[in-house]
Image 1 (cartoon, rainbow, N blue to C red):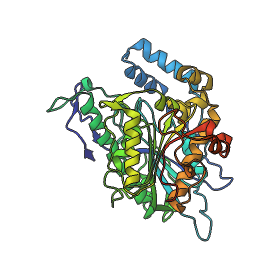
Image 2 (image 1 turned 135 degrees about the horizontal axis):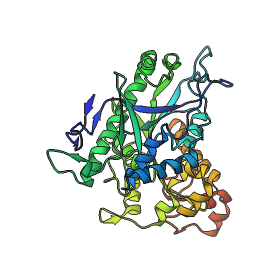
Image 3 (image 1 turned 120 degrees about the horizontal axis):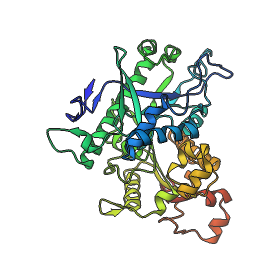
Image 4 (image 1 turned 45 degrees about the horizontal axis):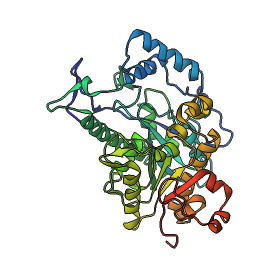
Length: 418
């Protein structure tokens, strides 16, 4: 148990930021043809009424009418949807004489999201040979998350606002975000520690102590996780957190080898510049296009200079814009309601193309960490020093694949001769 802040809830005086347990979903390459005896997970965690209340709290309309409206809307949009993945089946290669070892990714979700909102992205990477631990943060940024105590009691963590809590010192929105990011980092550290426990043969104990009743095969994962190939990734608030975890890494506690940063937050606090590992930063089109002031400077310029700084320190780093996408494009939402999301966010890319491109460039980056080989978009030099400002001559344009121009702008890239 870790106490991250002395802040307590006003309504009951209990600690608001006491880390008791961590919750994460593991996406992993499974044995071919494996069929689970467990039911598939629902995309929206049950009970939906808790999630509905969480969104009502986010919207500042937490009353009987709006709680039920949000609950009905969630049920209508995705209440019956199940994540198309087998649950608790053996890890790929479990029956092999020499069992393969898999690189790992720890993924952090954005504000008003959960571990289930990025299942397509995480599952696609898992199908390519990675173990992805998608964390559900209990820092008050998720609509609702249920914590099971050792005694069997349940506690629900909803969205937290500054006026929900009190402390020895005043807590404004900036201080709340600082505390939340510290809490999230602690969750990342504890998730890595849980993965270490699995690696050294304590997967059975984790299963025994899991009140959700899953993890029966974890004992067979002993020695199957590659801590030499650990990557942190995140979207929006989670991207800000991922950057924060890079301060001082790789370290014994966090042996992180690289990072995938998707739409780093514009209202999540300052972005950590102390980064000394290879890093891939991807902006959605809407994130780059819209000029947003960030601590007195354009957010795009802050991100660009951050990535340039990583390259100056001798580590490969890229800053790209995914053309035609919007902030939610890497999530599952556009796949579930493509027309609604395109209409509300301005996304113009085909939703399947969008997620495919995110996955492919992420995979190319992960391959680079292993082989130092630059493939696809990562093999190109800068095409757009600023968003929308193409510096290519006609010869270079004609020599590049059509899909490149259709899907990508490169703002920062390592020296092509590196």
